[in-house]
Length: 194
Picture 1 (tube, rainbow, N blue to C red):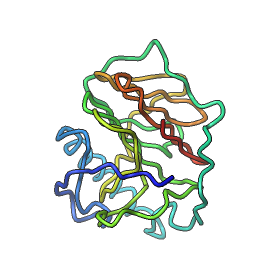
Picture 2 (cartoon, rainbow, N blue to C red):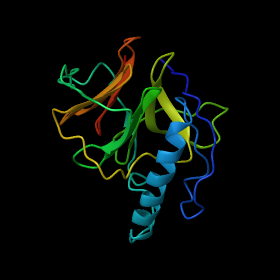
Picture 3 (cartoon, rainbow, N blue to C red):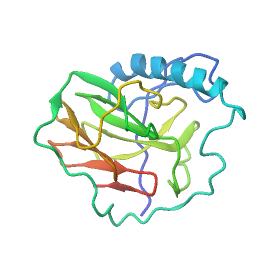
């Protein structure tokens, strides 16, 4: 089943990062400022990379078995409430931004493919997933990244902003719009939209 992409609004980011051409966020303007800061950190990290290539560019993607993630993280009743947060999984492979407008997580290394980009996506497709105030979760079309956040959301911990909650587990990162019940789980091995 082909999924529609989550639209993201453009904004300028530093030229030092070729992938950071524009910031487009389905869940509001607040993400732009955080993404710029994260993009600067990612640009510094990319400059120190010996090859200068994207970590997952050498991976031959395969289609995900999206029947579920088995023991995917379940919502936590004891989430820490925040206004907004930029954070990463303990491994650093998944970076997220959470606010009361939505949640977005990008992934550096993955063994799945998001499928072909929609015709109206002129930026990078499928290196992230997002959920907003309306609609279902889907892949992002973006020229930026929310990877590189300094703060880690340890396994078994949760953050909540407004109706949105993200839960970290060794099996993946799960973010949900608790009002609509829609969300996503993303991991190196596969992803799931619900």
